[in-house]
Image (cartoon, rainbow, N blue to C red; front, side, top):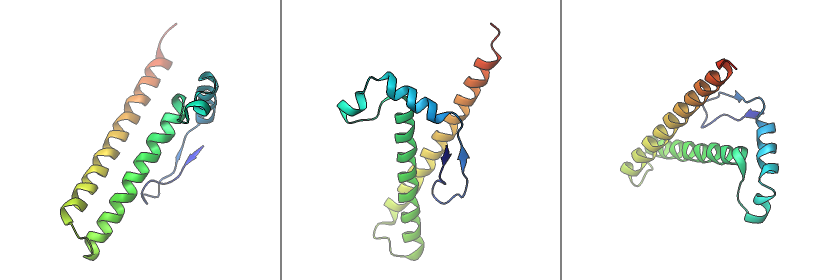
Length: 111
């Protein structure tokens, strides 16, 4: 599965096995997504989180472009939007790092 670039960074991440996680999460929920109308399982939650991060990055890009062009009506809110996007990206990066470390620890565990 290829994750599209976030906010024009031009970086594509390849996630192997994500389709299997999404499928197992949906089948394990016994159709909860269809009945509840929301996402179910790990795959659905991950998709929502990445989508939310992408929306945050897009709004920050728009705000910074408006600020640079001088068309921003409220420069303070533009700066706050960009800072929120930066913090969201840092959080996503830290979560990815911790998940990678946890996965490596699991694979190194002696049985």
